[in-house]
Length: 578
Image (tube, rainbow, N blue to C red):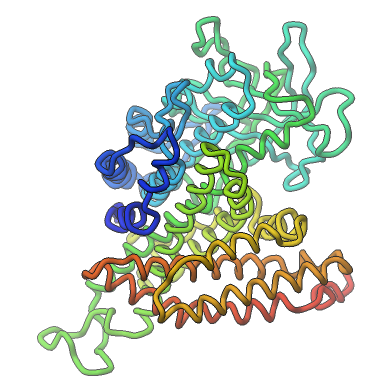
């Protein structure tokens, strides 16, 4: 059975020793009164909900899946009670605006709670993350009536959220959508069309489902410039703000998926459904990106949660499983064999998982901190850093999450391939994070095209300069300097070559994103090694840092070579030769 325990000690280390959040928050009036005890209590309580409420229904959710019957979607046994526990604890409104009954906690703290929830039960938390994302979008772009109507209900979990973008013929290319919105005499709109792959589009967990739907108005410009965003609730709010009459939208079917089977993914049909414009006409994609950017960071953290869950299972198994003898002689002389930890290659797999997971946790927090500084302190540089790093967080964290899940499965051997232990479920659940909210290839294109090439690499170089300013232990200083220099070199080369080669960015984008991710992880590992206390926990940190610098960071050399190749290596084959 899958078991999950919140990594509380590591979380507290990151909060209070590495990032020293009280020094950051004292300059943000909204957070200035937060005590260490309050923060510890939030983390501890979130860990309890994750480990004691969400995790126990994880495997049965996968085994049962969701069911569809004439438009009615039923979630697995135990999901409703677990969702209610999340809702009653106020977890969907953790970082919500207090004006509308949110709790107003920092985003970087929210990242930690999200990791725990993702790790405990990915399929279940998908209902929560879509709700949080919908709240963020409405808070950023809604009018006061919309905020007052929807935010308190979304923060409380009474109502949940969903995002309607994709259509059968229009995935990444949203400019091709066919869903239409016709103005109505009362100021609302009538939405008609079909959306596919709609996570949490229909289910039985909440009283109402608030769909945010992309559609085109009559006479709208072609392509993405003509997309508007609409609030389309399952039940139209009445004059008192409660769920009123049923709207004309329905689930046409649910998908039968490789993983996250407890998450209902619907085909949603909108048949002259009542909708309300969110934001300005023809600015829907820009408004939706407010939600999508949150979801992209959240999906990256989903990969991190999978990695932590996988690592916990693999370590537990490696300590218990007796198999073979140590190369240096028996360690369990009275037993028939030594445990798996005596084998160097098993340790390599476990240390790889640990190195990626602990650096990933720090990375997620760092991005969350930039979001907090940008939002609450109007820090333009922090906002620019958060926008730069969002595609890296989504892609690098989810790629490493899947890699860690597969490594855990390998530690289990044949037992990792059968359902009993649950590790094969982690692999299946983790896989989706590389695909939805924009595939990782799209994230790499976003990083290199919209973020780096657009400003000639200025924002990335500013981030590197900031990272260079930190003091790190001498044993890692030169390797870290070399990593920074390598990334500067590669960035300059791509910026120069791309000006004469429009296909270069897409040819090297994945290598470039991975190089950015590895370099940031090197910086974080050097910092963590320097901040780690002189005890068993700190010694383990430093040993893991040495493993990262010796066995993982050298991969950056290969990434530099790959990013140095010209686009013709990828593009020279004709279509017929494929």
